Image (cartoon, rainbow, N blue to C red; front, side):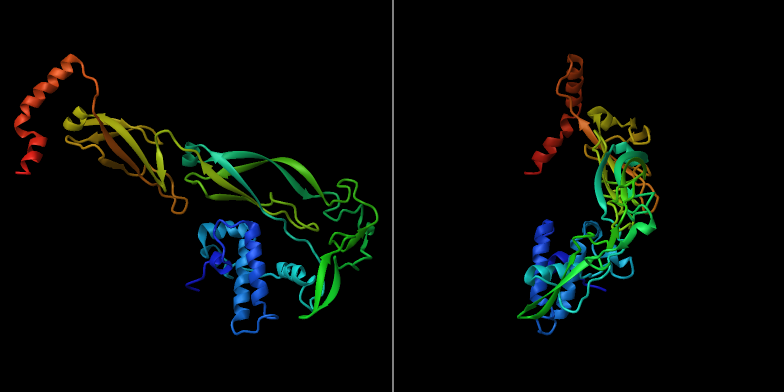
Length: 366
């Protein structure tokens, strides 16, 4: 699909909008264009578009991917990436009328994956060049090994919740000028599990999970840059009803270097040389991230001249090829001279007086 609309434009919010602002804009637009309220041509299509935009921007993981890669982040998944679910919509109509839209019975709440977590990790400039193994200490909620997430001492101790009859939700109906609206709410007795437990698991005290402090090794690849993310599977927030944990996303922040400057996969450095070396030419040992390398400075080199050292940049994560290093020469003019140096410069000035650069410039005005 081409010419896709920007999701922020669909909801009418800026890219810096907060979670509350995004939700408020969605509620307003969803109420305006819902097919049960708006019978105009195109309203249903616009409503679906609004729902799809909110599905991405309300999810921190999807929003981060969209901000970084745009629609391409979801096109690669083959299905567009937008689920367009209606859980938020039921909540939306509950806030308007005290209920969801009619005819939708309460559905059973089964195991669900937990939310993703996000962390920033700062690494040294040279660690980004060569890569490294970083060990993180995390507190992670994991499914209880004893009860496997049920929270019960044994299978025989798991029954059906008498309040919701195992559905995990309670249902109420309300008659409004728009018709009969049905609302669902998490069962207050079983907290949405649909189960009652006669005897709780002694290991997790009926929670279904245990909190563990663990060390996790993360391989940071060579060439990674600030803003890029690494995923650690299963180290996010705990799942619901025995479902798997979400994932942990690590956003990389690369520290600046005292001399090297990075632009993409290329490295830039500025080196000083004397005006004598610039005039006569010389050979210097230039620092690179891989060690010093000889560089020939030809005679007559001007300040600001750049030289390329091929292959001495950073590794490209996509192509596995290295960038280059660019060396900018800065001609250093001395501010203090010894008597001998001053005499030598005076001799040079007399030798070049007939070909003075400034004289040529001045003569051009005649």
